[in-house]
Amino acid sequence: MKKMYKKNSPYQVPCKPGEQLAICLCGHSDDPPFCSGAHKKKAPEISPKIINRDHDETLYICGCGESKNIPECDGTHNTCPENEAYRNRW
Image (cartoon, rainbow, N blue to C red):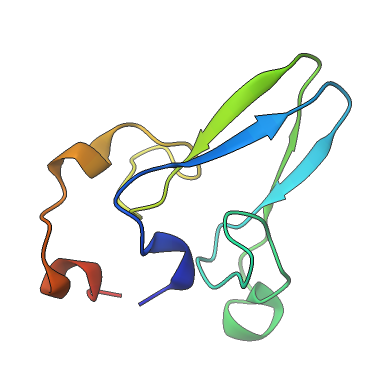
């Protein structure tokens, strides 16, 4: 299973004005939801999403892997089954 998507809830990431965040899109990060560079070996065709904000905001980053709007959470985790087989699908 990809490390990033072991949660059944979003990552809550505070973001400050002028801060730049690299959000993992490959799912293999050692520091989810942030990019750790793991994609370079495990998924070289995927790059992180760079997020810049001009205001204080809490970002909700998908932790289940089922969002239709990756990397942002769209609430799909609310419908994810709470079972081991589902969480191990990756």
